Amino acid sequence: MDKTASLNERQTVAAHAQTLFAWAAQACATPLPPQIRRRAATILADDVGAMVAGSLEPQVAKACQTFVRTSSAAQEATIFAPGAAVVDRYAAACANGMSITWCELDEGFRNASCHAGAYTLPALLAEAQACNASVEQVLRAVAVAYEVTTRFALTYPFPSFYVHPHAAFAALGAAVAVSLVRGHDAQLMQDSVTAAASMTFAGPFDTAVEGSLVRNAWTSAGAWVGMRAADWAQAGIGGGIHTPYDVFATNLRTRCLPDQLVAGLGERWSVSNGYHKIFACCNYAHAAVEASLSLRAQLGQRTPADIAEICVEAGPAGLSLSTVAPQTVLAAKFSMPHAVAATTLRGTGGAASFTFDTLNDPAIAALRRRVKLAAYAGAGPPPRDRPARVTWTFQDGEQCSATVENPRGGADQPFDEPTLLTKLAENIGDVLPQAPAWLACLIEGDEALMAQGWREAMAHITQGARP
Image (cartoon, rainbow, N blue to C red; front, side, top):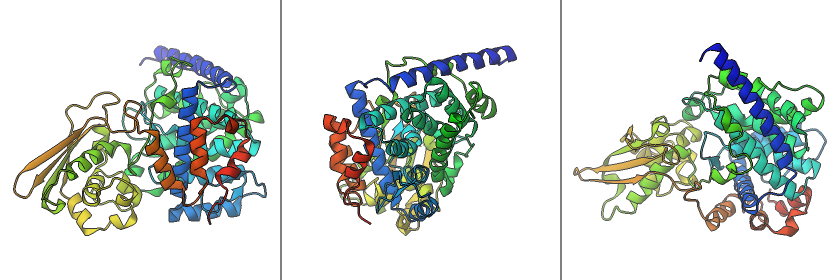
């Protein structure tokens, strides 16, 4: 692109960003369409469940102890973990940000590489409890913050997997969320969000594939940065309208699609294009997990021990999950060989296939080495960008295969609410026993709940919390 074209693009995207911020400030003061409110409530509930599930992991539990010890004396917001400690809002956001992506059970956005719930909710819920926003205001903020965050991700797509979206967009999403809860006008929101964008960090995508657990801390750090960006903007310390373009398009070498900031604004909602997970691994492996479970159901008189080789044909993103001997649970969740081998042997794509003991399980390790990856010829645009064909070749040479072009969970073939509520109860019920029923009522749109303050809501959610 020549210099003139680049300058024109930079000006266009700045003008569209201003339009987006003006829309967001207005939208957060307006009732949501009923179906959008329901989706916002479903995302909130699902991601709270992911926070609780992650809080049980030993590294997260130790990190949360640190957040509690170093918290100020203010008791403003709750950590979604055993004991439900109440700490200052920054400590709570950091703790919940640490746990939300740990188990790979948080929801995600289908049309871009972006987990907007993970980037917005830790800061949003902490701020809402500290400010005692109403439940209705919280759901509006969830939907609008999700919208703004995903539109930035759509506008600045990475041409390949070299920067992880958790590092790229977490701070920006948290700033949007806090700005909305605090009722910032468009200018103050712009100052907050652009300042947060300037503090984006270039966490390598391969950090997840290699299993470095710091990847799970990026949403924690992003929550803190976003909250502080809102604080500083209120003190007159903000970013510039061109900052996001300069960070993403210029420094990080993303593509730039300016119209994504405003196309269909107020008519289409990104929360309607989120996906939910019941498999505890990277979404790019879900089609292969589904196909493996389908094949396992057809084994008949054979057993997995009869399998000589597994060929997984996957889309480009799935092929990047190539680690054969993962050293951490995170690496296992980003390993196609592990996901397929463990699912084949254990009969589940849930958490039981990605626990620490699976890393050195001799049978899983042996089958991982017999998994071969190949390109799926029919991969297309979303929602068929994450397909898989799994072929088992048995010792006697016979083969069987199963194809999943589009894994379940997205807007085109969503999990029904009973499935998601069952997942929620499994993730949260042993720690916060009253939470599943309250969150189910929230999804149903119980009007009595909408008028509650978020502090009262948290008292219900955490009632009887177990240590």
